[in-house]
Amino acid sequence: MTQSDTPSDYDRARARLEKKRKFRSDLVAYVVINAFLVGIWAFSGAGYFWPGWVLAGWGLGLILTGWDLFYRHAGLVAVACVLYLCGSPARHHRV
Image (tube, rainbow, N blue to C red; front, side, top):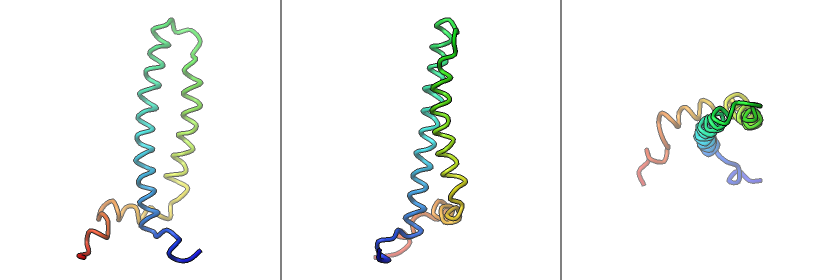
């Protein structure tokens, strides 16, 4: 693998920011859909709490994804913060 084949710190940080945005939208979907399912459960007699299976399975996936995004890759946090605060370095250069 040559140096041009490896992603730069900028590319990796940008990919992490995109993953974090996707995680936030997945989290919103989790809350909205599961609130809807709990509402169906409550209005249908509130017997056996079947939405718990969806909450647990989907929640476990979100927890693992969140751990991977926010705790496992701490090395690129500084680069991601710089990109978020300063924007793309390409826009600061004139062509």
